Length: 272
Ligand SMILES: [Zn+2]
Image (tube, rainbow, N blue to C red; front, side, top):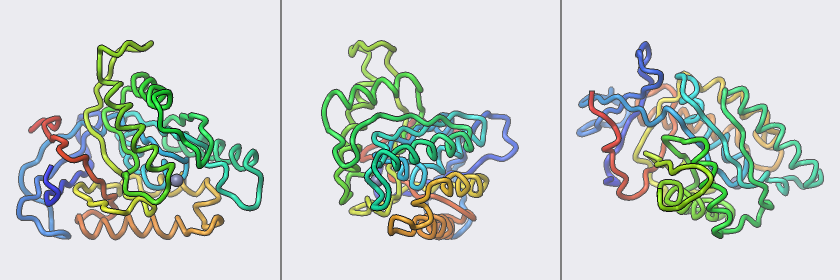
């Protein structure tokens, strides 16, 4: 996909489809102006899996697209490769990890999604085939149509590791010749999330309307102590105002920006 092309997705309210976004081709459209042009039903948000290094990333940077899926009758899941248990300077990793897990389970429940975990140590997520196949197996089990994950342009090593793991896990999951317990599953789309820690060379090409899920998504995020800035970064202010800013750019009230992998085709989007 051209880096200059932008896609705009919004909820198709009143649609008979279990889930549908509407994609507006953006030829000639200025940010902030009403979207126009070709309209296509998009079913790629029918089952969204967020795959993150840490629970906070999964919910703060990737949670709204998952909420969009479940809000429209689709399915959603949050996979955290680690519990982010070393994120507190006040309480022990054991206690903090347990609190993170509980918050993630509660937040996922609030969004009618599943919370999934792999138990790699925070800060030491390994990039190896064991981790890639573990993620591959979860992809085959939960069958996401779309995966939202980290962009590689991150200063955080776990985030870069997650990016690497997911790229190969998606490949392994879709290859029938790779025999695992479950049959192959092809992930139709992948997006990289707009994450303050992964901003190097992040270029948004897609905007997703999150207006209908904005309040519930915030409630889910509020279950994490770090959302309120207790670990030093004001996640609440950043991500809630970011949704407003991205909404201004896409002419939605609230939106998240996403980045597509180089060369990702839009052929999976059927034209209505
Ligand atoms: Zn993180």
